[in-house]
Each structure stands twice: as C-alpha cells, then as structure tokens.
Amino acid sequence: MPYRVVLLILLLITLPYLIAWAAAGNAYSFGGFLLNPLDGNTYLAKMYEGWRGEWRFTLPYTATQSAGAYLYTFYLGLGHLARLSGIPLIAMYHLARLLGALFLLWALWHFLQNLNPSGKHPALVYLLAGLGLGMGWLAFPFGVVTSDFWVAEAYPFLSAYANPHFVLSLALLVWLLTIRMPAERQRLARFAVFFTARGWGELAVVAGAAAGLGSMSPFALVLGLAILSVVLVIRIASIWRFDLATQVGFARQVRTLLGNQVFQIVALRWIGLILGGAPVVLYAVLAVRVDPLLAAWNTQNVTPAPPAWDLFLSFSPALILAGLGLRRVWRKPTLAIQIVEVWAVLACGMVYLPFGLQRRFLVGLAIPLTALASFGLEWLEERFTRRFRFIAGATLALSAPTLLLILLAGGFGALSHDSLLYLQRGEAQALAWMGDNTDPEALVLAAPQTGLFIPSHTGRRVIYGHPFETVEAKVEQAAVSGFFVNAAANPQAASDFLKLREINYIFYGPREQGLGSLPDLPGVTSVYSHAGVMVYRVANP
Image 1 (tube, rainbow, N blue to C red):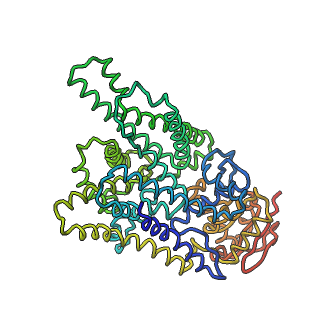
Image 2 (cartoon, rainbow, N blue to C red):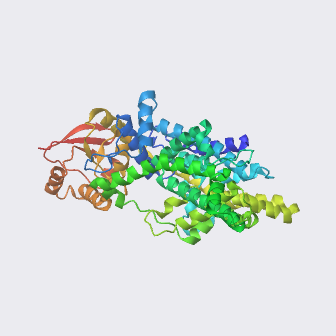
Image 3 (spheres, rainbow, N blue to C red):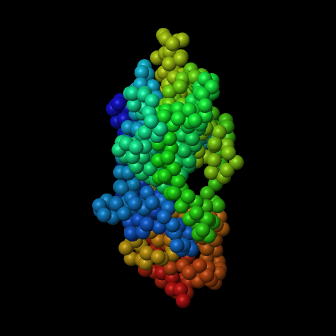
C-alpha cells in the first residue's frame, strides 16, 4: 500500500480545516465546514439530537414538530458517542470523517489490487483513484461550476473532504464489491459455501455492512445490489450457454450452476446485501410516506442529474482512458473486471432514469472509471513506451487544477470569513447561551442564514434554516425575511406573526440587523445582550 499517497491525501483533507480554524482569530468562530456548509450544518444538527439522547430524526429545521423516524441513525449515533466520550460534536464529526477516509483508502487499495494484481503502476493508479477529479476547471473561468467541484459522493477525495457519511458509505460499497476468489477453483457441491462456518460468518458480516450502508446511503446500496444482480445474470448466462452447447439436460445445467464457485460466492454476497440492507431501506421509504411532515420534506429533496457534457468534463480524463481500458478487457472473464465494467456502465445509465433523485446514483463513479483507466494506461504504455511518463504526468495534470481550485476556495472562504463558514464571535457566544438557558423544545425566530446555525449549535428549532430540510422552504424563508424587514413599519403585523407561529425566542444579531430594525413589541422582553447580539423571549398565551 503506497503510504506516501495515503499521507498526502490525509494531509489535503485535514490541513485546510486547521487553517480555517486558525483564521477565525478572536473575532470569529469557524463553523467546521468548507465544502457545502448548508448540508454540513444539518448533519451537525442531527448529531445534536443524538447528543440529547434521541434516536429519532425530527426535522429541527422545521417549526412544526413531528413524531420523527429512525432515519440518519449514523449521525444520531455519533451524537450519542460525543455525549458519552465528552468530545465536542464538531470534533466527533471530523474524527469520524478522518477514520472513514482511512477505511476508504484501505478498501480502495485492495479493490484495485484485486482487480489487477499484476498492474505495472499500482501507485500511479491509486493516486489517480484517491485524488483524481475532472477537468471542470476548463469551464470554471466562464462561471460554470461542474460536478467535480461539488458532487462529493462521486469522488473519493471529495467524499473524504466533505463529510463522514459520504466517505464511509463509499468505503463500505467498495469493500462489498471487492470479492476475492479462493486460490482453488474446484467444483463445489450445490451452495456448499452456505454450509460452512466461514460462509455463515461472511454472510453475517456482509449483512451488517449492508445495513450500515443502507442507513447512510440507500442509493449506494441499491447500486451495489444492481451491480451484483447484473453480474449474477451474466454468470448464469455464461454457464447456461456452455451447457446448452453440449446439449446437457436441464437438471444437469442447474447442478452445474449451483456448484459453480464464482456463482456461489457472488450469490452469498448478494443475499447478504438483501438481508441486511433491504429492511433498512424499506423502513426509510415507509417512514417517509407515513409521516405527513416527513413526506412534505421528502418532496423537496430533488437531485436531478447534471447534463451529459458536464459529466463528460467532470470525469475526464479518467472517462476517456476508461473507454480505452474497457476495450482492452471487454472479453476478460475475471469476476473483478466484470464488477468494474458493470459498475461503470450501469451507473452511467441509472443516472438518467426518469427519477427525481438521479444524481444519487453517481456515488463512487470515479472509482470504476479510474480502475478501467488503469487498463487504458497499460494499452498506451505498450504503444508509446518512451512517452508513457509524459502521458502519466499529463493524466495527473489535467485534473490537478480542479483539486487546486477546491482547496483555494476553502482558503479564500477562510481568509474572507465567509458568512456561511463563520459566525461572528458574538453570535457564537449567544448561541452557546441559548443552548444552556432555553427550553430544548423552543422555537426560535432568526434571519434565514442564522437559522442554518441555530439547530446545529443549540438543537433548537427554527422557522427557516435550510432549502430542503425546512418544509415549505420558500414560503418560510419569505415569512422570516418579511418579519425583520417589515417589523418596524408594521409592529402589529409583527406581533400577530409571533403569536400565530408560537415563537418562543427571537435571535437578533448582525444578520437580522442587516434586514431591519426590531421595534418594541408587546410580550417581547430581552433576556440576553452581549457583543451586538440580543436574544428576546416571547410571552405566548
């Protein structure tokens, strides 16, 4: 395993966060996220629910309380661990992210070695898989942000850079699709692997991993099942075709199929995915449909696929080399190669299914493309031996600018104290006070951007805080902004709004002050004032 590559990747996913924390100084507090802070804060809010002892997800970014459901149990569990260990929530978040990255890097190396154990340049391929992005930098000067800048679940590096559940679910998917064949290739009795202690043990481990994968990334589980299903069909067809050619009877064909070692091992892995993952995914689907509030929340969760040109740019040069590699290994019958081929082709097709969550099937797509690209590089080396170093360097260089831009974007956000990445020190202190001195079930009115931080830092609910996790998000955002903009001009309407929505507290800091002034309102009293931030209690009948 190339440990220098591992250390380089760990450094690149850690150092920017350390710089951002150091850049906070005395005037700011770093929120803990550099890529997609909107979603990052929602994960922290889920951890806060777990920290309070909850195991049910209850939409903290929505004013109306629901009974909730056993969803996002990974983050709820991290919250429980944070409470039991005394580790701050954000530290637990990043500890899980780094441990997940180590697991992914280990799984990725074994996946690639299992695919091509005699490969000539394993370290180069591993570096491409671990750090490679796309050529989206070509569109960046024109104001176009392609998928390789933000669809984190599709790339190992971005997954490890973004959050723990992306990187851990990708690691589990890679591990589940790494199927090692025993050295012996003898004919087995029908389903012999299911009647050994090793077989039962593997089935239990696979089922447990599938349950974890289903809870973190249902679409990764569905993708894994689809890949193994297609591989099983291919294996059945190849065995059946052979027996048909020899005109063997049907019963003999079935015995041959059930005694085939590859078929048995893949079938065991497939059954483990079904047993462990299917109940988790089915529960999530039913829970969302049964609870009206969760159903309304889910209707906003739409993730359409990027256009084809975007995907081509975002996954090249690996995609181009993968085409060469696919041609080279198309007729090779090894199981590992079949899995990679099916993964690449199937994911590219599933992403354009007529379905509202198409983009979710991009999970880990960079991995099979890079794996196939390794065979493309071998083909190029055979034909251009003297120029191969240039070709390898160019392959790395073509995606390097995207990586550099992502890291620079985080650095720029840190230096400019971007308002989505940082709280002013007074805001952070006020949120800490709210977490210690208000009812855990309190509903807080704040500006839209402040509403992003309140559930993640205090666990309190807000009217609006997130474009997807706030039910009827556009309506609620307009209502919150309208309150602060119009309160001074129409105090009676503002007072009626507080009563109608049963607000318990008003957070009034620099973001709210930027929207409008807050007049004296009946039943509203100041309970906190420090560093330019006020918190008001609202007396509701």
